[in-house]
Amino acid sequence: MRKKPKVLFLSTGNSTRSEIAEGFLRSLASDGFDTASVGTASETPDSLAVQVMSEVGIDLARQKSESVRESLKEHFAFVISIFDARRERAPIFPSVPKILRWNLADPSAAQGPETERLSAYRRFRDEIKAKVQAFLAGEGRSAWEPRTSRVA
Image (cartoon, rainbow, N blue to C red; front, top):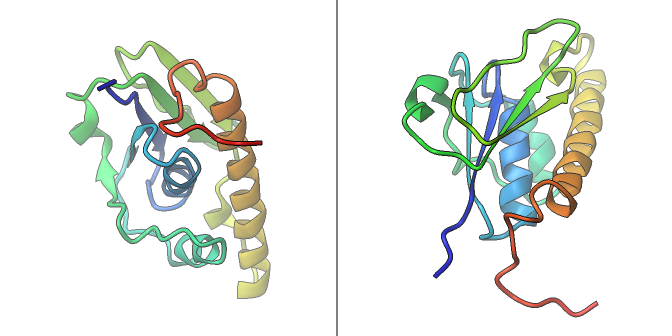
């Protein structure tokens, strides 16, 4: 049995961006990867992130928010750092063969009425889905081989 490659999504708070990315990788790659998400500061899951992901059939409830310290002992094939280069410094994670940096604004910084904030979360959700799909088609493809054959 082939060991599944481990992917870690790393962001500042681990309540929105990394949680959404982890949810998409779990959903799109089925059981092709072991996935986790952590933050430089562990926070409670963002209710708007949970809501917009439930709109596309992904439940973030089984994911848990963890601190980066808890993952330092783990060995990951990929660490994907999600941050806003204009406002944040990219978190650093030692001893990883592949570190990818995705420069994406944090939707939790959106201001205004809930409808506007939800729009920002939905735009982010769609953007992160495209990033995860591109990862699966490119960088992650060499590490991931689907367990079942698919008919086109």
